Length: 328
Image (tube, rainbow, N blue to C red; front, side, top):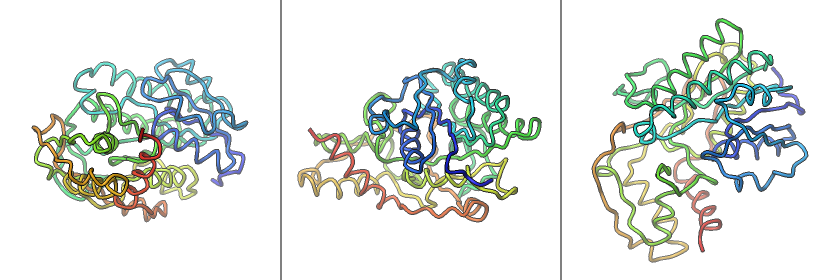
């Protein structure tokens, strides 16, 4: 499947952190991009750089509404499905809405994509699917029991995608994202991801609060690695590479203590006082897994994935972006 210069892509959740980066990238490559978003967690300011691009179309709609999905997939070659309600804590507080968006909304998108004869459906899966599986590194074929409603919804997505591949012939690829970070990631709100939240706190000389003792570790994955995986998943012509799932990560792990050390180091270039900010520690968070590390062998061998950004390289870029956009 050659990726034609004039491909038309639907990016659901295109006003969100990952979605807006994907919109920006594929528009820069000359593709037509349709964005479907209800702005529940996405932001209009994420679209400002390309909202007037002649190849960009915004549909304000909700994946829980089948008609919105059907409108969005008209004439589309590929779907990059990013729309979801993320966050383990959010799903513990409100499992019903997480399920409606992440499961019912996902099923609506699959049905719409199938009926529109979309060439391929690439979707955001999650490392949370590994659940209580203790082995490291995580390999795609070995998962455990889910530890949160969110994890259940993302696992159900994989099961539905597999059924649609087998039953209807819809090509699907799931990308199990591991702790993605980078430009445009929202530092505000109750469910803000740890990196932008810590960056904002440090910039304001406030103490970041780590859940637990800081020795939990994660495979932090810079946004440009994620963009690369989406592009590879979309354009692969290897029959063995489709109708499966891939870890989308860097393949290395760092503790939260390491993370904060790097952030303080890079941010203190802008304000030396940041180096002196103390760290606070609190209880572990419900539903959190202690350690996360991806094997990226499958993505390397079947898709030709070569991640360019380590945690440190990605953080340097992210910190520069945040300082430019958030320092007031």
